[in-house]
Image (tube, rainbow, N blue to C red; front, side, top):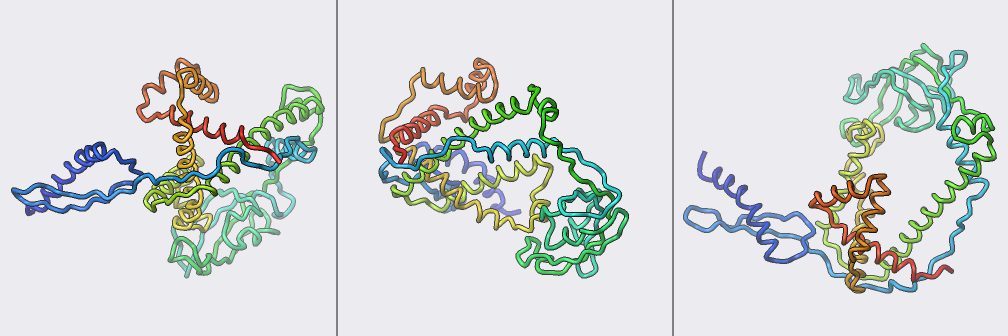
Length: 371
């Protein structure tokens, strides 16, 4: 095989340990994976490599106290209440099978389909007993519209065009023919919002009592949403007034984290990434581009808040730490002792920093003025 193969194996064994030691000795705050370049590897000589990394950038803080922010309307309106009741009614709708009419918009059509491009089938172009909501635009082009007016048992030829920027290059911009069989038509039967419905979906006997409870819950949600929006707007002002230079590897690393979370979410819904790309017509590159602004905002937020913690010399005492852990345990509906035991066994927990950052956020919000 030659010596070079064994040098490669030896390097792979040595680099992680030596790199970790060099990181500790450097005391740098590294925010990217290293780019390794082997400088010297030869018999009888020292093994030398360089590791190029991005380090945490310095932040020149702008104003973060006594900021101004608009007043928020914290009252739940009648329109908001009505929409929430309609949403609950929709969630409790029954699916009825329709046999005496053709497909209409908002119906759910159960279909079998096979797609052809240039007379040949393609991967992902076949489905059996697929539930398609007409008007959801989950299929490409005018696929759904062409099923309107069709009856159960009818065979339909659907002609569509794949988008020019479709993620599968062999299909991008090409016309496709789908052979579709309509098997079932279903429609949602949304219950009437009255005393009877209220008693079925809640512990209350009357619509009036249930409405009051829903309004109370909505008010709590709105208050939390307002507090979150207020925090985000104020932190946005701090970011805008501060100066920092983000290294590109740091941004790319955060995008990768967002992408992993995204893939995990869609997989929990029973979809693989390739299936999601196929149904939406998006590309992985386009999704990554869309995530870039969010990644930058997350990094900027972390940097300015950490800078405020340092500037204000914020520390967490034992009482504050325990209170923070209790709050987390409550949010997970777990016993405090059990939860705190789990926290101690986790080496990747950095709760003191998290609680300190929250104190920095509280400082920004509490000093702000509503105008």
